[in-house]
Length: 143
Image 1 (cartoon, rainbow, N blue to C red):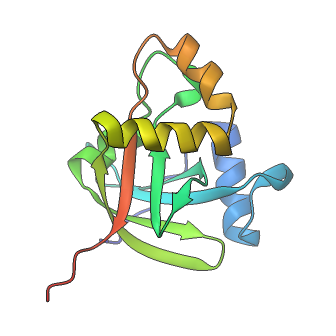
Image 2: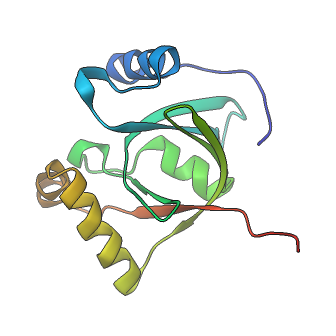
């Protein structure tokens, strides 16, 4: 992933969680979170976002919930524009490639995400949109 100037989130709770994650490797209040690093689609700046940890077999789900808001989070546009992302899970830093899950695959991952973090159910009911689920996967080997 390209490096560049880091621009902290203007949202206080996001900034606080990112700082805590980088300092300790764990989420605030014992939450199971990972740290997604993207490049801003418009700005080109490095952006960092805490996400609930939803992982299965080395693949991570990034749920674009915005806590049930009516629009997708900014990181979603960043990932669509530049799908190569970095993910920190505890002490592990992974280089992954994102793609949007659809159909039955999305349904399976949504179900897993709601099991891991039941608040997603309420987020979906008030969102007024279908919350996207992106899968973050290891890069394919050049072989």
